[in-house]
Image 1 (cartoon, rainbow, N blue to C red):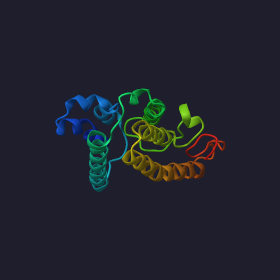
Image 2 (tube, helix red, strand yellow):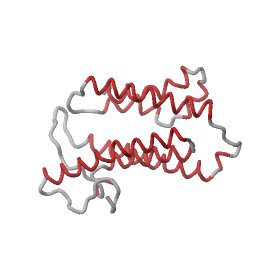
Image 3 (cartoon, rainbow, N blue to C red):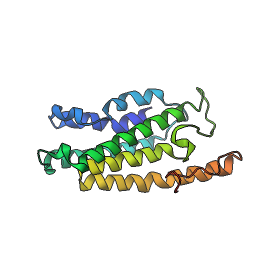
Image 4 (cartoon, rainbow, N blue to C red):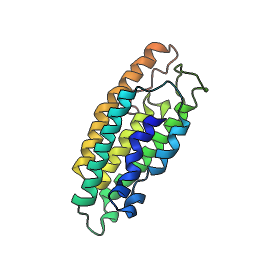
Amino acid sequence: MWKWFSGTIHLALLPILQEEPENLCRNLEQPWTFIYPFFTRGRPFPLQLLFFGTLFCIYNGFLQGYYLIYCAEYPNDWCTDIRFSSGLLLFLLGMGINIHSDLLLRQLRKPGEVTYKIPQGGLFTYVSGANYFGEIVEWFGFAIATWSLPAFAFAFFTLCCIGPRAYHHHRYYLKTFTDYPKSRKALIPFVF
């Protein structure tokens, strides 16, 4: 529960800490920061990983926020630019996939249960890492919408970090479950 909260609280607090509360509404995921932790179940999370994850998220949040507030210069018609529109659409699509996939994963286990089960429904029909795919699409959408180097770097970092996790989860599912769908890919529907 606290893993998610501490890793995303900076997104809600950064505009306030920079004395720009009008920017608070810019972050579309801000309410999810406070809601998601109450829906999580499973095993305890290592404190060291929590600390380093929080440290990374604070640094990344500062880098993204600083660039967007102080360095980025957008023309007045940026909201009608194809980069912004397509990026926003990708961001919302990825966020929807991510949230829906997380909901499906949470419904796999009953309270107190820690065993693995085969995810079903949504994009899990096509890939083992639907939640990872959604997050990657989300952050590449953000990078396109903001057209900024820090956002593209973060999107690439996200792909490099959670892409292999999706692949390893896929291999684990194939080894563990004899009835696991053989046509299901690891991360990208119909491709990989």
